[in-house]
Length: 149
Image (cartoon, rainbow, N blue to C red; front, top):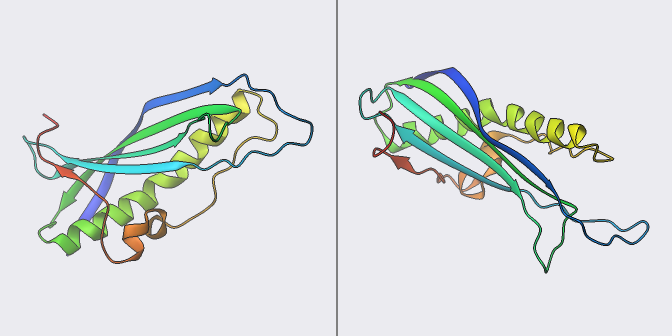
């Protein structure tokens, strides 16, 4: 049975940029966050896995937004008994569930500090439903062994 614990959590990138766009009174913007997740395994100690969870909101010409945000967190997990694809899927989902509240808080805190009114609150969602492939029984992780030393 897979066993894991989060040993550390760090902010790899937290950026907020105001986009100076013309806003009509009472105009609303559709804010569509883009989420990504990547998992990297240490070469020196295969029990150590980094989980990189990211939220991006970027303005485009077609879909302008009043601000751009990048919030990327890195969780360091010690994982034991992760031998099968199903173990990797379970770990990816549970690590996402563990880290997502911190990602939500980072986005909210950035928009509060930038005096966005009202601040942006990401929805409370399960890590098992954040990525569409997880809902279908697959997983959207990228186990990369070429990374951490």
